[in-house]
Amino acid sequence: MAAMSIILIILFVVIALVLAASIALGRDTREVESARDTEYLELEGAWIRYNIIGGGPAVVLVHGWLSSSRIWEGLAGRLAQRFTVYTLDLSGFGESDKPLSGYGIRNGSRLLYAFCAHFGLTHANVIGHDLGGAMAVKLAADHQDVVGRLVIVSAPADEDQIDVPTMLWLATLPVVGPIFYALGRAARPVRRMWVRPFVADPDDLTEEVIDDAGKSTPAAVSKTLSIARREISRGRLARQARIIKIPLLVVAGEDDQIVDPQSVGVWAGGVDKAEICLIDECGHLPMIERTAEFNAQILAFLTGDARYLDYVEEASGTEEEDAEYPGEEAYPSADATGSSDDTVDLAQRRTELDAERDSVPIVVRKQGGRYPARDRRSRPPERSEYASGERPSSGERTRREPSDEDFLPDLPDDLFDWPETQREFGSRERRQDGSSDGQGDNHDYPSGPEGPPRF
Image 1 (cartoon, rainbow, N blue to C red):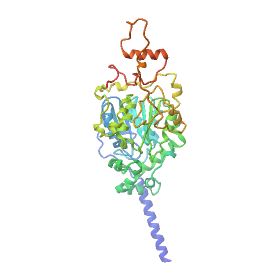
Image 2 (cartoon, rainbow, N blue to C red):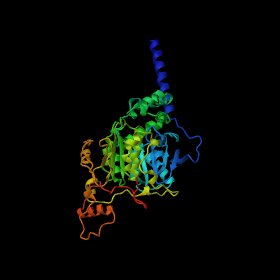
Image 3 (tube, rainbow, N blue to C red):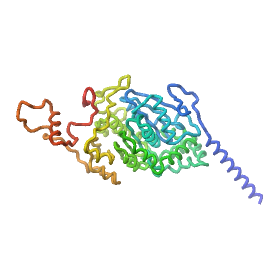
Image 4 (cartoon, rainbow, N blue to C red):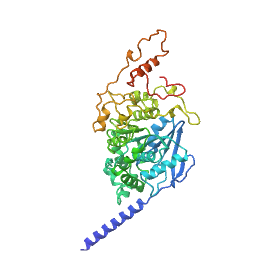
């Protein structure tokens, strides 16, 4: 009897110690010790770490849950050649303050709005990953004058589309979660087990991703996830996204084990100017797993220049910093005021085809190992099939090659009254028959004072 009493007392003491440790760890907060004006901003009551590089039109990069702005280093360096790139560590993550409250999609959207307002950004390009993508959607829906183009990457549209690994799920539990997170923060192998399912290939897992998983606090990790789940449940945010009228690109890895890739159809289904890009053999972190391919997709969408996609295969076989993209020297550079031909309005002129096109998102997938030219005026038949739940096969689309008939008009009555340039031939033919297949010389290159960029 005495032995049983001793065991019960010891068990009670252990439980009490666990609860006390859990409460203490759950209320853990961290503040920035030295906030330099060039690196930190005080927004929504917290010091936020940020960085600005490049010059040109604004691009804001928003990281996701259990991550930081370091995840964008590859894309930020690439975009900085043509854009002014703004990155920040969201409250509770990276090098920013980590308070007890103020988490979730709504609070994250307010933080992004305050960030854009501080720098006077309007019609900026915003790219968000994971729950950061949901925050970007909320920002675009609530403040349509702030966001000009929107890219969301591996972002869940409903709580059922989130599948957190078991080891990481333990760190988000209400009572014992803080203890499990403290264990992972102290033991690197545990953190590696947390984030291993984030990538399709273990070799793509970087040290930065592993380190960032341990830089947060139990409150930030658990509350961000739990509050965000409630905010996107039953498609609430996806329904609000239907009011977005700006160009939207939805990117996902086909082998994503964290967020269901089918979320792309939910996000793009109710947005008029939406495109979908599915990256094969890629998990939850396409910006790390398929850096060159991901960067080319983003550049093609932001600039409207589909030639970036033609160089995806070449860039994939080299280091990203050594990859050569088409005509970089021919592109106009941004001046000190941030003006550039990249600010060309990519909103398309309304045509008779738009009524049918707007209800179905454009799907960009590899065809025969290459990406097809991005054509906004016409749509292949398989896009409607994807909207109904069937994915397009890679061999269905055939690209039409221009022939002499596209350039040679009928002989005029006056043989000396010929058009001056070959471009006028194609334009005259299209005016006569009222159609265009989008494959001739009328490409969707951004135009400027010097005309389309040269190869």
